[in-house]
Length: 278
Length: 278
Image 1 (tube, rainbow over the protein chains, first blue to last red):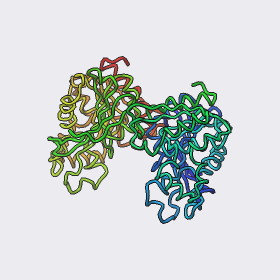
Image 2: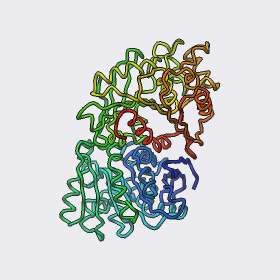
Image 3: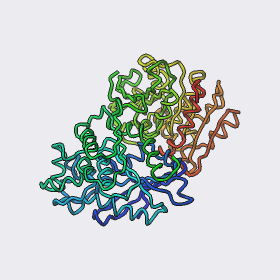
Image 4: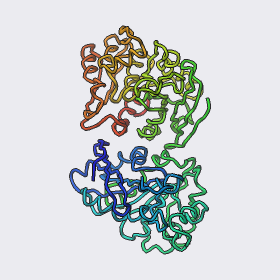
């Protein structure tokens, strides 16, 4: 790991590191916020998964989360949203395929399958790296925005017992239920739709082995809402008796001003599940 | 005025407008945050002046100020940092001259003098536009970061009675005391140094007609600190018996993570001076 930058923030440290990822076969940068309490002993960690076009920087710069994390004694880790500069010829051609659009899945289709293994990266490789290099407790939670909300929910549902809590902002809730989602999944996973369900939150809840309560905030003026399909998630959770709190926030759009407005409630929600005084 | 964008933020509205500035002879964008209280009646306003390379967006995206402004009932206005696309051939050649580098002064030298009248814009034209289009009280305060900290302090010192309070983050405190500052001022104001003092905080305090207390936060790991000269401001204020609270913040650098860490204290400071419950 190579330190890229560090800044004091709310009495703690925001640090960015570059490392060579094995499963992605790519150089990757992640950000970690270490609250002041991390200097005295292990703290739990929240993994934050960002949306399309984002890097490790967007959340740390725009959400205002460090203030609350510093109060709570919570570390936050932000991975990048895809490998970069992989040499795949079309990686920068479309905003929602390739660079910045890893969708937190393991691609099986060429040319993506050599590098686009973001599910393994986020679930296994990155946490191992984090735990080996920072003094953190064994408790973690996960959250994210848009494509990253999709990532947070699907990762939590596929890994019962791993996360103490899960939440999402405006998640892509039912990617197989839209034309564009079908295009993305067929690009990364091939045309056999049976392989798609493992990365679709609204399809996964039916067979969830652990009913970790799901907190979702969704702006009702979200310009992307047709592609997000929050109602599909609501219906799937109702059918599966899965505990979902879906809050439609009046007047809010898809951007980071929406995330910043409600991040405090999410962080306190996670802190409580992580055994912190929230 | 033309609405460029609007987003709900902490129960209020963040809006960006484009308008044609007379004194700058340029199309300009500004941002205004209207807290929820603005729907019920007039609220006071804080003018925030940003630093080099910034637009109206940096502070609103990165400082986390809307949360506190929404609690306090405080509007915030962020102007851009210069006119743009003026047609001046060299406007984009140097990071600290031209675009993004208006220095909140009225340029007298060609070719800058036709457009670079940011002092008049920030002190007169923009507030008139704001007051004509939004229901604000007659109370305002001013703050800023780096070049914008210089702007906030010099504007407040030159306009006794206009602002209820003034503060700054890592301000350029003594521009005439550095080689680069001399280069900038000679570019905009010409070689007659007697015209420079009106835009130098450390020179203005000696003749201040009103001793508005000055709150300044400065990171002691600020990579720009040699060009900022906080000690010159400290010495000038001591010599002039001018009330200055200069807080050296251990470990903090020049960036927005520093601003975000301390913005709440500044906003409460201004709110108190503006008659709000802080």
